[in-house]
Length: 155
Length: 170
Image (cartoon, rainbow over all chains, first blue to last red):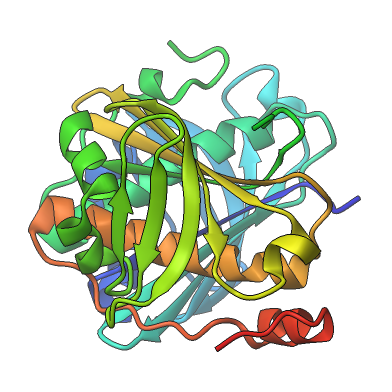
């Protein structure tokens, strides 16, 4: 059986440079990522913190930062009592020019079998990345309430 | 047709700033589909048992199937069989389901591809590559009025696997 991971591909009408900026700038992420700041200096080995509505939800370390092609960091949940028992996972964003658009492949891996983290991120990422795509293409993020995602424990 | 034996091989979820009605029209309309589905046009008789056809830009039959479930603006299930000789005989039918739900001010569209027998990753690579491009472009058409210019060739690993199974592709 294959190891538990989540892979999501989307195509965005933008440039790799603009997409990189949108993934790494809190000015952008606040607008499409459930009001989350992504705080880091984006150097390999540096810390990263995801801060939602002023509360740190996830922390990690930058593993790769090859602007504007590939970004990866470890991802350890630190907010929810149950989820924070799970080990750190790893997020990779791969940005590839594809004609006039960019193919974004997100891979999130390193989950325990039967854990709740995988279910949560599997429902969260499509909403975050759909809103990111809208923001870059139309200038307006999509208003998706967290409660609409169907994640257990979030209402 | 008994669809209970079909198991999902791909689930893809995308959120669209639109309404269930517009998403339904985009999924079932020929004019709409030509914009986001690599120029292919969807022709569908919207009732259980009705025909489901996809034609290439030159009018050739590309995919044929039947409507299995049809709940306008909520759920559409069709058999989705690419028109390559021996495909159904060797791989069985492909089942595709679209589910449309309101999510705040947006619409959640969930696509599920399912099969009634184990299918290799090589064969499944076609859908895994194609669906994100098709649905990303559908979202762009509905939100911006403009499709994405995504050009994709079928994955070589899929073509090789089909050839090895004796399934002829154009």
